[in-house]
Image 1 (cartoon, rainbow, N blue to C red):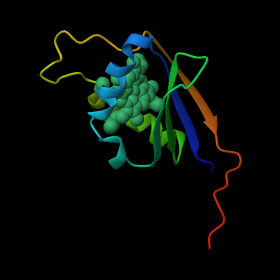
Image 2: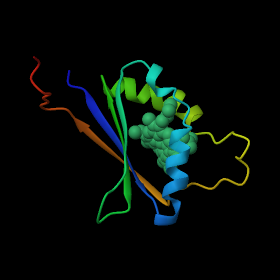
Image 3: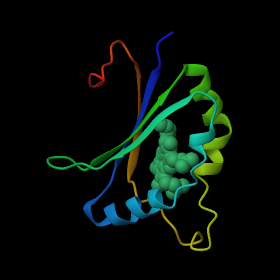
Image 4: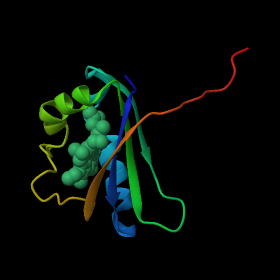
Length: 109
Ligand code: HEM
């Protein structure tokens, strides 16, 4: 079974970039311990777009769904002390799903 890639595409207005990155800098860090989790990257747009990509890779669709139903909810609750007046930094989001068909890394040695 191939791994699956789930990318959350966040539309982030210029003036909200710092807020978003700070939130990720203080993220829950729970995803690392989730069953089937393989990789996470927060990708900042360099040019021509206002969309950040939250790249995640999972062993299976089931592992991703299990994370969505439990740990993800906790990780997305803004329960911190600065929470009450917090508004989402992103003005929109879309979930992209992929299967890994091929992959490669650098040659070893
Ligand atoms: C309404 C849609 C979503 C928005 C606006 C959003 C935004 C955010 C933000 C601002 C954070 C930083 C921590 C926080 O503020 O709670 C975060 C954490 C995270 N988000 Fe989302 N998110 C959404 C849905 C999703 C989905 C569907 C995925 C699946 C790919 C995802 C993947 C992650 C991951 C992996 C973290 C880090 C969690 C951890 O450290 O345990 N997000 N998200």
